Length: 323
Image (cartoon, rainbow, N blue to C red; front, side, top):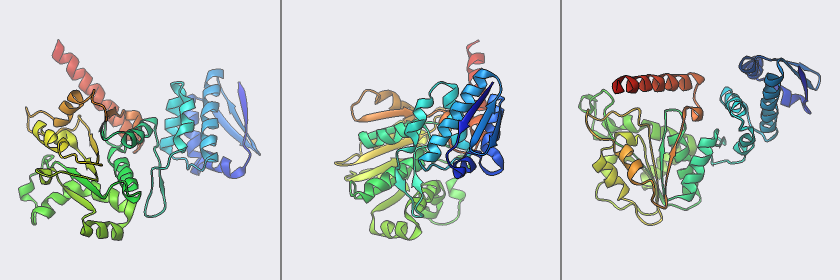
């Protein structure tokens, strides 16, 4: 079977194919089809069902290009996964929302349906708890939403915090004073803020106290009003720390709690405050809980494969334990 797709503009065809035809090669591999371009036409040939689904992916990608989206391996593969599960109508909604503009003028947009729900949840709830694997944009999008709220004067401060739990290293052996010891733990938060604000603006707000990046222990005894508060790596909080953090919430504030329950670095036998909070708080109005899957991973494709491999291994372990 052969399907012909018309492409209105040559630059759209160039964007669709990608450098060295990398986007088209992915589609050909995933659906076992051949895609050939001639003038303003694209010919997709192969088995009828494969051709139909490959054509749906091409149409979806052309729609994204028409809306000004830049194609990458990640969003090509994501479109393919949505078409394979029969959810191609969801692709249209992806290009509509811009969460934030970075210091360099780059728009930050949700790249998956899960990310879109996450941003919507932050906007519509006082507390959002996001659980999911590495690379799903939990921290980065939360910082983008915080910067947007701060620029719109919805909050006066952005507070970013993490529990300083060692992932195999010891704090005491790091050189320098307390601040320089905890800075490595907070580096991903700094990086995201540098991206959104630029180093100079970030430094200015830091000095004024509009931005605070600190270990979780620094939150004790405070009431955080008119603030956008992000607790990152929350899987490494104890039950007591999580309760302490949640009860810091003051008037006109928002909280976002992110973590990955497969990467707990707490001492053996200690309960994760994140796991407990997800269970305890699930039916409270104003608190939303989301779970990302490996489909929401926006890093290298191998990250998705690694997460799947670990999930299979964990499932195997659980089965063996039950025997």
